Image (cartoon, rainbow, N blue to C red; front, top):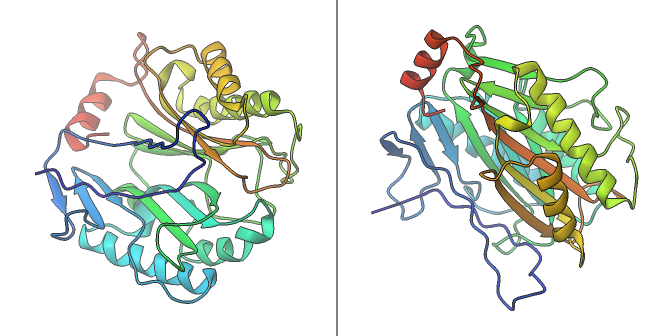
Length: 303
C-alpha cells in the first residue's frame, strides 16, 4: 500500500554495469497525508514535514516559463498541506545544462523572486535530460511547517563568514537546522566571489566541499560526527568514485553514514567537479540540546 512521492533523475551509467539504478528514500514514524490519490502523489506530509516530488505541472515553454510554472505549482501544493514557500527548508533543482553559469542563471533569478529571505538551503544540478519530453527543469522540496514563523528556537540558519557565494545575490542559505536535524545545501569549491578553487584537482575539491559542510554545521554545534547522509554529485571519471569513497572514509569516518554517489556529465561551473549536500542530526555521545528541547522536537516533528 506504499504510495511515495517519487522523482526520477537520469545520471551517468556506471561503467561496471549495463544497467544502474540508485534509490534514495525518506521515511518517518508519522501518519502520511497524501496530497492526491495517485499511485505516486505529487505531494505528501508526515508530521510537520511536507515533501513535493518535483514533476508537478504540464510542460510548456522554455526554462524561464517552466520555472514560473513550477514555482506556482509548488506554492499550490504546499498550500494543500497548510504550508508556504517560507516553510521550505531544502530545495533541489535539476535542470538541463552543460556546465556553464548561463545554463542556470536566468532561471535562478526567476526562482529567487518567489522566496523571501532567509530562503532554504539549495542544491542546483545540471543533467543531460529529464524524464519527460520538453522538460527543462524539475524541483524537489522538503518543507517543515512552522519554519515561516521565524521566532521559534527550533529553527536556525547558517552562513559562515567568508563562505562561498553565487555570482549574483540569491536568497538561499547554506544551512538550516529544524529541531534536531540540519540540512546543508550543495557545498562546492568556490570563493566568496564564485571563482572555482583548485580547478582540475578533484581530490582537493572534495576535501574543500567537506570542510565547507563542517563550517556550515559549526553554528549549530554540530560536526562530522553528527552527519547522517551525504550526496555527492560529481563529474564522472574512472577514479572519481574510488577517490570520493576514500576521502569520505578518511575525513568523516562514520561507518553508519549514508552516502550516495551521483555521477553526471558536468556540474554548474566550468572546472568545478563535485558538489556535496548533507543532512545531520544531534547524535554524538555528549548531549547538545537540553532535555526539554529534545522532548519538544521529538513530540512535534519526526525531524
